[in-house]
Image (cartoon, rainbow over all chains, first blue to last red; front, side, top):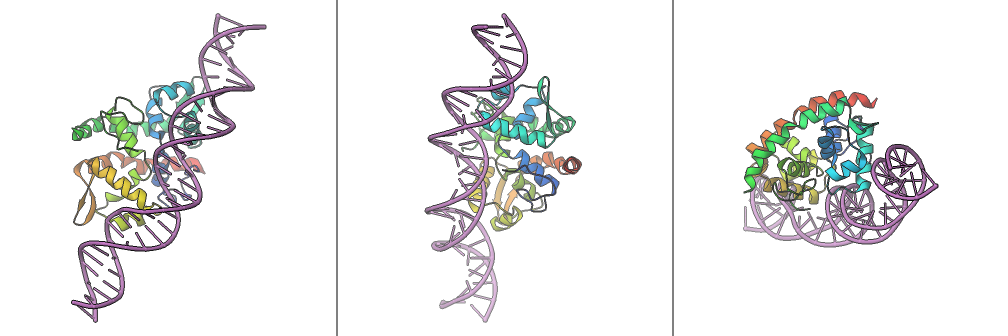
Length: 108
Length: 108
DNA sequence: TGTTTTGCTACATTATTTATAGCAAAGCTA
DNA sequence: TAGCTTTGCTATAAATAATGTAGCAAAACA
């Protein structure tokens, strides 16, 4: 699937509304998981594979390319790392962590 | 794929950490888009199909079942609607809308 | 120079999503 | 109450995406 670019047709919006481009990007397998893990600090490719437990290298590489092309991560000497944009995005989704704990109680 | 249930193995976490179950659920195509659209108010199946522009009925039905089983939406006489949990979740992801506008500027 | 580690790529298999057709049930409407 | 329309799906086949495994070239290390 092509990179979802705001302003161009994306999944959910022919006009490419920014939020829809973002939801398209984040709604791909592992995308949010990668951002979530990288907030702890830069990671190598192999370490990310371990964090994600069952991601295939093919998919990991694809997601990393998409996230780089979307300016959310960059490669540093220490490995992949969140950009300023990536950190901001993480901070927006961070509250999901605590919320999920309450939500989880529904499943008993 | 099976419904991601907190406490059971999910994509990204063998132990089923709640946030990973949530990211698994939301990281499926259209899941966040559906929640996003439903915040405006209850929608019928056909109307959701229109909102989502290119979702197939097969996938829409699958996502709706998952979101219902996850207590984020319910069926009402007016159509599918967010539950209290669903509304809370929407409110958590709502800030993505404005943030995405700034992020979109990177793509010029 | 030999050994590891790293960051991938290749490839085949499996899973997911799409696209399209269409049908049964419910809700009008005349 | 006999049609016509709308709704909420299901069925099926084709396309696309993700997985699992093997392995390789380059860099780091010993």
